[in-house]
Image 1 (cartoon, rainbow, N blue to C red):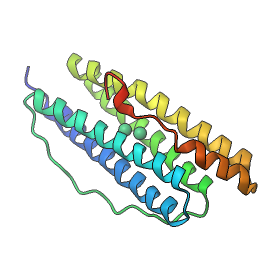
Image 2: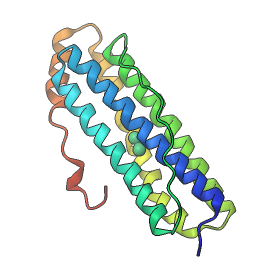
Image 3: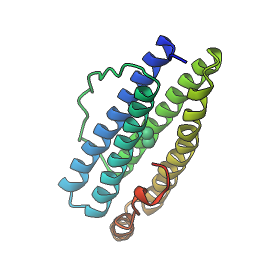
Image 4: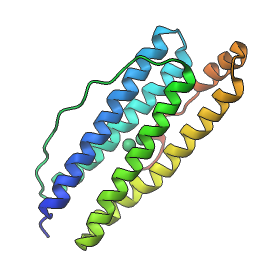
Length: 171
Ligand SMILES: [Fe+2]
Ligand SMILES: [Fe+2]
């Protein structure tokens, strides 16, 4: 069944959101590299790659449905942050907005009885739960470390151990 133009537009917008997130995470890599927190930089690089994979997944889905992909402009991200906590607060807000955006596409697909899109978006809904949880937990640890630089450096070392997402069957 041909994809509804409204769903096509919403998925194209979601591809842009994922690309925007990817670009913002890359800007966070820049911030961490500048202050020599290589562990955090490594972690954010993985996050950047994950978002690219999300965009690619939707891109492929739209092609599989015979839809037309339209790549929109990605706004310039900022690499200016006041602190490590500020970075993760920004990341959490971004993920919350992304969850709302995916919920919006899901709701539209529901209205239009587009069961294939609902099925495809299921993965994204589950992923967003993980993403928000991860950002909240990390932010909690950073706040717990507070002004303790050695605690922050321990966290920095741990962040370097982030496993590859490719280890999962779906990504
Ligand atoms: Fe994403
Ligand atoms: Fe995300």
